[in-house]
Image (cartoon, rainbow, N blue to C red; front, side):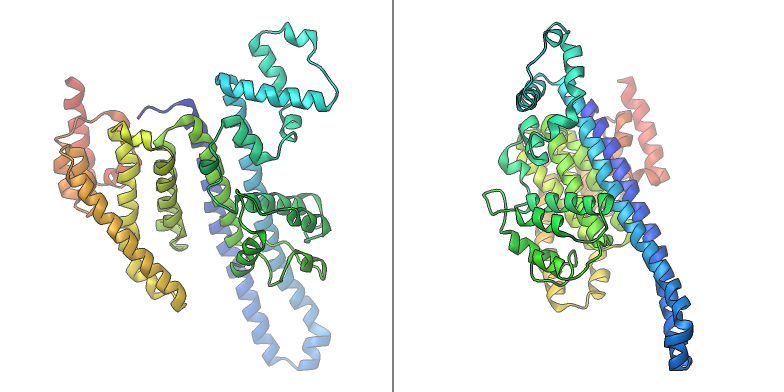
Length: 440
């Protein structure tokens, strides 16, 4: 499937944030080991030392050493979180600028926001502006993108400019809470004392229930339950004592997931390209396979594919082979990865409630796999039979079937085939078939 400019912009964004999360996981694990090693050493020394000497004489240097390593980890986590948000802002602004320049309807809506900004500032469009070419007018208006941004809340601005339907844009009922909180926490770290303060509490207390938003209290409780907040009862409790801002992996991935989905939702509204979602899902699969951080990566990859199918059904109605393979094919492969690792992973889960949840989910996706396999088996084209064979790890059958397919060079970039091309026999068979197909 030929990539358009929106695909290329999305590729750059996806590449940047996936490199960032890989670095976060790898470096944070090393820092966690350092903290654990010193904690263990201190614990051992505390038992062997005289109690008075431990608490009043030599304790300070030891605890200071432990505190330094621990604080270094916290600073690292917070820095990675703020950079993640900066990457999102950079790429979303590049997407907006490109869209305004290349899409007349988006440029017109941006002009509406620009005029609103001028009116609020008691200004009119100058005669010099009216005499400029359309291109120069656009460039002039883009100089004020930062100012225009504040004429609408960020999420409303994006939804308005790209004309994203309500149901598609507000994919989480607590998205407004999430985005407000992410930005408020980022401001705490970058501009203030890295402690939850009155300004943060006021901002969060302003969130109200609406058609687009869940009850903020329920979302707050989920943050406490999932470790994104300390164990407090409400926002005002942040002011009763000093709570440091900490962005551990759970919070970092929470932010990563929200910002990734936001960008993809906005980009897909203009790109309408399943390749963006497909590539993202594959990267989430690989993150699971390489990092073993739990099933959330796979779950979120499946959710992205399902979300796209629900909101852009016409892409599949066109019966494009690429679209079907990118969406349904990748979903089948993702489920297969999930099921192949499920049995070993479920053994490590101690919580009975959590274990039951994953068991039920496993039953759901097993049925979905059966439906997808049936769907592909009913198709006559050999390319679809490859999907079934791949989902069942029958690599030799994939090699035989590729000899029946009219292939083209771009298929090498299909994420679906990434693993297959690691097999030399399949790769050689593909190259041989490519030569035959190009002669037709």
